[in-house]
Amino acid sequence: MPLSRALHNISRERQQVIKDDHVLMLRSQRLRPMPRTATPVLTKESPIELCRKIWSLSLSRIYLRQCSSVGRSTYVHGRPRISNEGRLAIGQHVSMLSTVVPIELLVFPGAVLEIGNHTFINYGSSLAATGSIHIGQHCLLGMHSIIFDNNFHEFADRHQRPAAQPVVLEDNVWLGHRTTILPGVTIGHDSVIGAGSVVTSSIPARVIAAGNPARVIRTL
Image (cartoon, rainbow, N blue to C red; front, side, top):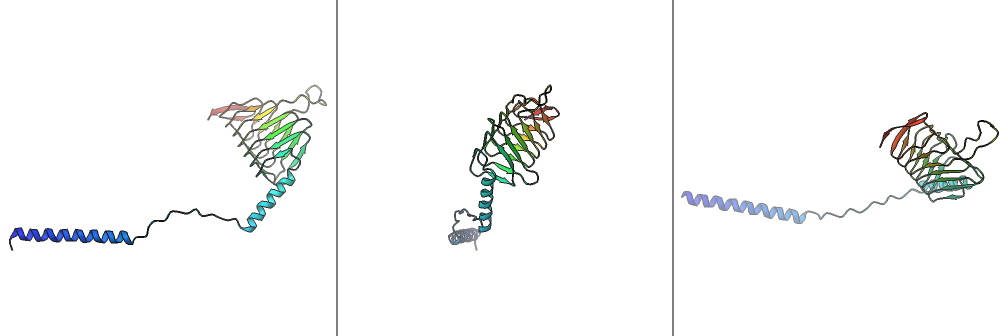
């Protein structure tokens, strides 16, 4: 067989193999199942979980019945100690853990205590307002945090109560374990106070402060 004819036959066989492979690929694509769009899976709460949620919300409303106003989806786990003779306003989605040691919320006559949305207060915390205490949104109060706007005793006459000095925690403030906030203090937004600190003067925004008395360690 001439060489040219042999090469021509090899070329035809190669083209036929390529064509057969192409046909098989098309058939496989035709038989392949079409991809389905992902449908969201809706998880339903079990009846027991739903009953627990309703029961917890009902208990929260009972425990917080002395408050002047309470936002929706606000939960308190455990029984807090509340004395409200002024105005106690709690925002939405606030969570309080009052199980190991009760949380204390004390509002004296004519005073205002405000707790912003999405704030968490851990057990053992004590807040006492004789004038004004404002806690912003998304704040975290660690265990046994203490906030009060009055020293309750004059140095010269310990039977006389001094004037209140407002306390303000701006949004997204984090108080570490056993932090004490004294009267007249303002803590700027996004600041962190180290555990065991005693804050005697105002702290700027976006810093980490710690110590007794608390001092700025670094900025954020």
